[in-house]
Structure formats: C-alpha cells, structure tokens
Length: 119
Length: 115
Image (cartoon, rainbow over all chains, first blue to last red; front, side, top):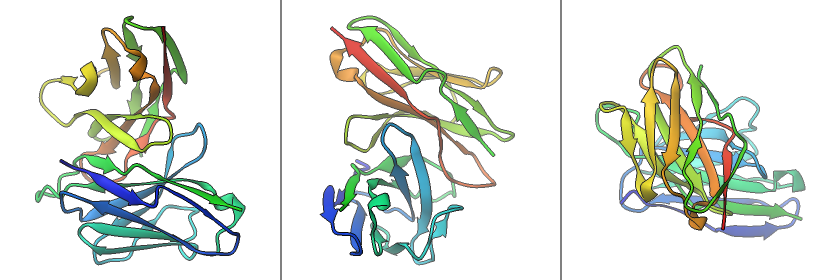
C-alpha cells in the first residue's frame, strides 16, 4: 500500500517550452501533496505544498508563476514548469500524505521522481 | 523552526559489518521522525518512523533506529549490511502540531558497502 507514481520518469525539452509532471496516489487519498526539487548530491528542497481544492503554498524563493501546481483531486497533483530554461533542469519528486482523519501529520510517501533536462 | 543534522556525509563499510548513521535534530516543539532511503535515480522510500510509543523502532530491510529525546537524536543502525544497502539515507522531522507541516530533511548520508 501507499504507492505514489510520477509521470513521466524522464523528460527532455527545449528551452522555452512548458512541461507537466503528474503525481498520483494509487491506493489512498491524499489531501496534501508536496513537490520537492533535488540537485545532484544534495538533499530535497521543498518547493510547495499542494492541498486538494485550494491554491498551493509556495516556499520562499519559489516562483509560483513559473512552477504551476494544480491539485485537482484527492489522488492527483500536477506540476507545470512554464517556459523552462536550462537552470530548471533537476530531479523533481512529489510526495503524498495519507489522510488520517484526525489532522495528524503522518507519513509522507514519495514518488519515484522525474528527471527534467532542458536543452 | 526545525533543523536536522546528519553528522556524516559519507560512510564506507565492508559487507556484513554493522553500521550506524547518525542524526540529530533541533526543535522547540515535539516532532515525528523519519528515515528515508534513496537509491540512485529513484525517489525516497520510507525505512522507518517514530511517531510515539517505544523509542526503538524497527523498519524494513533489517534497519532500526532509536529515538533519544534527551540527546535529540534518532540514529539509524543495522547489525550486518549488504551490498544492496548502498544508497543515500535521509533523516527528516516534522512538528507534531502547529507551525509548518513540511518535512525538514538532513543533508543525507551516502552509505557505501564494499565487498
């Protein structure tokens, strides 16, 4: 149980194009999903917290107009990198938290990640 | 705010040797604690977690960790490692309530198991 998928696993695009990454919780409902970015040999950096049916909360320094997040249902969140540039190349990982029903901050389960390369 | 310190960025060990990966945290409020493992080019997999109860927590793949509140530590241990345990290990905390709900990660420890 508690499986999170991401699609695509790898994407290469040209500078100036937009790329959409999907994050799905396969066997549970996730009211909250998180989007992280990981640079080579570094830890994860939280970009934004996505709540179903409401606007995402972005971390300081993350451009909300560049990284569009939509959490349309309890099992799907999408991250769109708009007008991508080479500096946006990175490993993007999402996570989803099981809804405990008691407001308890329980475990985050992570997707396998998406490698974005912008040429 | 919370912070997590993983004292060793790299830990090389020989196969079948014991290993301890150290994690210390700082927080003014109670926290939940987690260890995640990341294999190359993959996402994070939950190894184990401490939410409440017994301070000795057993996880997958033979790993265990002990929560020590007085020392604000949550060290990860395995009595005998395998080549397949070679990976990056991340310690993380999140406050039990109040404040930000995000996970705060340490910088990671790369475990390399040599034959």
